[in-house]
Image (cartoon, rainbow, N blue to C red):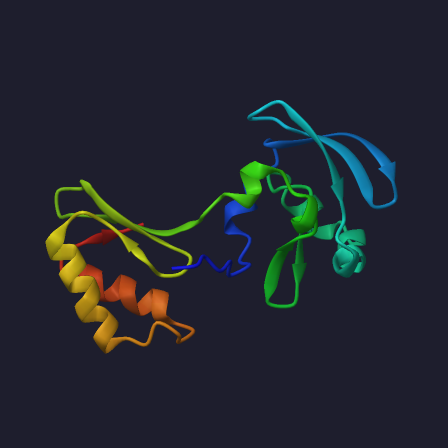
Length: 156
């Protein structure tokens, strides 16, 4: 299944330490370093996101968030999506961690609401839930969490 970002911003809310801004080259260009790899890169603010980038209120209120993250209506967007480093491009979020009744991790769900688990019982329950819950509905994630909780799983 192709990963489609929900643009919720959750993944980048604590990424402020993973991209270091060395200096600003121009109004919408920054010399940066990907801290985890030590790789330098140029971050250019995407042309269609320059207006939202100029408002720094979000960054001021969320000092641990990536400095290039900004709210845009109902979404929180990466303003350097086109020039973001590899660590960002290859990241796939986890929206649910699933634990059994003993607290042992048995699976996780990514942003596409795709289950990743080797637990056959959990996979069967997930398929059953998929027949009962529309995965395209706005509250599908909440319904899935409740369904699994009702079956004895702990969700984080």
